[in-house]
Length: 150
Figure 1 (cartoon, helix red, strand yellow):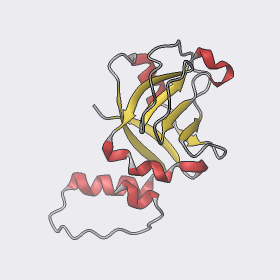
Figure 2 (cartoon, rainbow, N blue to C red):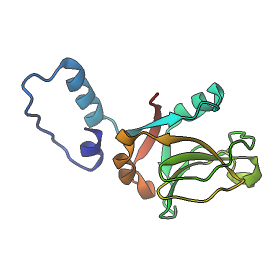
Figure 3 (cartoon, helix red, strand yellow):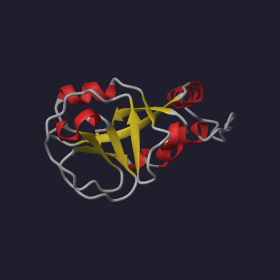
């Protein structure tokens, strides 16, 4: 549902005459919010503090971002020690660590396979339900937030 509204649709008709209250509430939430919720799965070693920090923020993709990844405005300045600097495969979520200087804390989502970097901690991946939503947040088009999808 969120895909339709974030893609610019104003109206969505449903053919299910037995739609439940929860489904209708979720549909209304998607239609009224300007923030796209992107479900992600955190890796087990990510601290609760880091999760809280990232889940509490609203991001906007940078208008000058490269095609291969989404770079989020709004997260720099979070102190991040180097940890799990693994290859960034498609749909992985990473945060720049202290090796990256003033970029420390920047959230990034890989849109294709990227190599390993000592400046990026891989912290999780975008849940399959949220992957199509990523097309809507490129190049400063929409605000987004991460939602923990266990």
